[in-house]
Length: 368
Image (cartoon, rainbow, N blue to C red; front, side, top):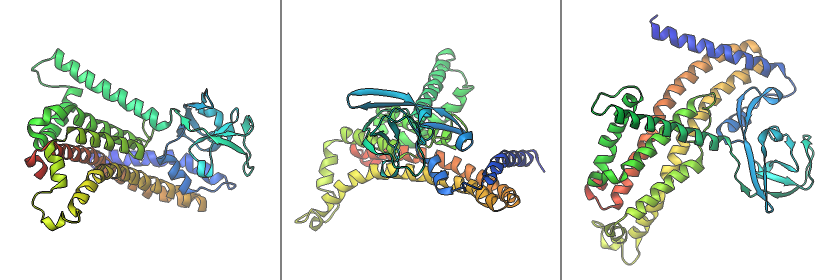
């Protein structure tokens, strides 16, 4: 057995031992059975606290600030006051049912534990919610990391001009050169310098958040690139840059598409309608592709982990046996997700550059 295989086996065994403690707590409680659905949804969606480990009363969570503008008043408190949605604080609580994910104002200024099964009358939903959720916190962390990485690399270029790169510089430079030479320059040609800063920022932002989502411990574990609001904003930025960069030929081709038979344009403007619809479907495809690929990977991984607890409730011995198989599949899916993290950042950047190239009237770039 070579060194790399021994190392992989050691990692798998360590992960199995770590899950043993969670398995013991899961099978020890017969009152509350493990439900894989809420477990998976909780980990792939946003939340008002950053869960670290444990479940229920034994869980360890980093509280995040909840900030509301309600009826002309600014309200702020830490998320631990709500105890994972099981308590209210000064009449504010986490919504349930159709209002799940929102902060609601109860009819009474109730503070304390909310009993299960008791209906608490809701006065209204707090619509202006500027809370720092897990995804928002992860966004700030990723921006700080990106800023630190590239400022450090820029500093190295100033200190050591015309010298071989080293450290972070040696890690970042090949990636930057590859994206420039294989994505941006072939697509945009002479217009590449104008859009390179945006496209490189887009690539590294998506890549970093994809990688952070694969790390199961803080500051990783947030599914930022699997949040459709985030991917939607990235797609909208590309959409607006494309439209504001467009030239006259872009709109002329949309109305009078060259190379298309006249009877597809007159009297019923079929092709202009298709081209106009395509203008909006392109950013929609960008948004959904990144969101779906990253979320699907997390769901599959969490599904393998859930099997341990599902079989563990049947019999602890079965749970321990299944844990070995689940962890092996977990490692395999982790490696696959690592590949997908790079591919999705590459594809998003590539398509964005192609859409922009088509708008600025570069026929060669649009054809390619």
